[in-house]
Amino acid sequence: MTRPRVNTTRSISSVLTYAGLILIALFALFPFLWTLAISLTDKTVTSGVSIYDFPGSLFPKVVTLNNFFAVFRDFSLSKYLWNSVVISGLSVIGTLLVSALAAYPLSKLEFPGRNIIFTAILSTLVLPSETSFIVNVITLNRIGLLGTYWGVVIPIIATAFGIFLMRQAYMSVPDALLEAARMDGATELQILFRVMIPLSIPSLTALGIFTLVNTWNSYFWPSIALIFNPELQPLSVAMLQLKSQLNHDPFNIAAGAMIMMIPVMVIFAFAQRFFMRGLEGAVK
Amino acid sequence: MRKSNTIILAYAFLAPALILMALFTFYPVIYGSWLGFTDYSQKNLSGEVPANFVGLDNFKTVFADELFRTGIWNSLKYLLVVPMLQFASLGVAVLVNRKLPAITFFRAAYYVPVITSISLASVMWDWVYSKDGVLNWGLKFIVGVLNAVASIFGGKLEFDAFGWLNNPDTAIWAIMLVTFWRGFGYYMVLYLGGLQAIPLELEEAARLDGATPSQTFWRVTVPLMRPTILLCSLLSTLAAIRVLEEIIVFTNGGPLNSTYTSLMYVYSKAFGSKFAFGTASAAGLLIAIVGFFLSYLNFKLTQEPPDRSRKA
Image: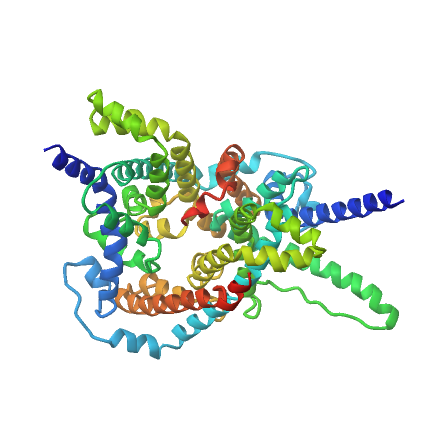
């Protein structure tokens, strides 16, 4: 007699659990689903289609990709897309290079000052850096990089997170392997590029993906660093311009938003485990 | 010989990172503090004129400025998002910390707002919050249902739709909800990590001793999660007091300065119109001090009380 009752309680509780899970998922995903629906809506099919026609605007009757072409045509989206690609690409390469290099002596070489330097690098995590953007603008202006791609990129590529992540990866490489390589006459540079880096591909991948998504999405710093040169703005910054400029046409705005979001979603779909492992939280 | 080579090599490998950090991370903190005592402005940025030392003038200006006080007040108000965000994230983490079919899908879905750019969030949430938006549509629907019930008793509810970001009473709350939306998946992952580090036997033992699920949660899980809760609420407090991006993309401080936060003051002094870097840096220093104080407070509040640790 008790067993069926337990089963009933259990199934009721699992129905409630899933109801909760689905509600939270709707909260998290609704803005995307709506924006996606708007971006696919054929605005020409009937006069006066409104994005605010609920729940109709969630289920477009006629689906089209015209809005995507229109936003490329009416708003120079390809220019901003290219800027995003260049800035994110340079940031990823720069971060990987700087971190992979700096982490090697910090994990595998004995030299005076090692602990002080590592502590100094970690201390950047707690520095009051909320107004650093002001001085960085002055510095970039002085060295002539304000308003260039490099001006956006070089202040953000040396991070405690990246160096720490790579140091952790190198530390798991056995010392015996390095000793063997040294016996065979390998230089330290060769050891770094032939032994350490090939053995740390998963960490490099994780760091690359984080950097890519972060710089692709970042709004504040690029908007400051390119304040006098809007021509080089990435899509994340130009999105606000798109929002005000095409105010009358939410369909095209939605298409622009989707073009920016889709690459992130694709990366997330393939590299989900890197994000969900809470790696980012390890030091950030 | 070999040893000195190693030293040179070590510093050569470290050089790019150290130079960049010195120039763009450490130097701004030092030079930024100095700027707060100077009259640095547009003419110094464009020309080669050095800025003048002006003592505490900037601090006097900032203290006398009512906008700065508004900014501090609104930033403190913004801190209210922290407890809501932390409770919800921990709750969601507990909810998804189970072996259920499709649970990884839900975890991933909750993380999607975290990887959404703030500029995209502003596009999407502007529509949600607008006068004809989905929030008002939902509220109208609820009011309609309530009215159907209330009409039996002869009552009637009124609801006039308004733009949530255009109303000085609601704008800051609306933006806080977006912060919440973009944050709960992030903290969920951190809490999930903490939860999965708790030995299953402990919760099992509590259950066998007859503890209800809520007792197990409050008496076993929460105390063991204290370090994670401390870390998350600290991160969240510092992010809330430094809120700026959200404000810029949604309201730029308006309407009627109701969303004008402390860093908005720094930002608009520096890049608004006059490039008053001196005044902006002075305000930035004061905000950094508030930030330190809050971190300390947060640490004290979430620290384990000494008598309790003995009992456990």
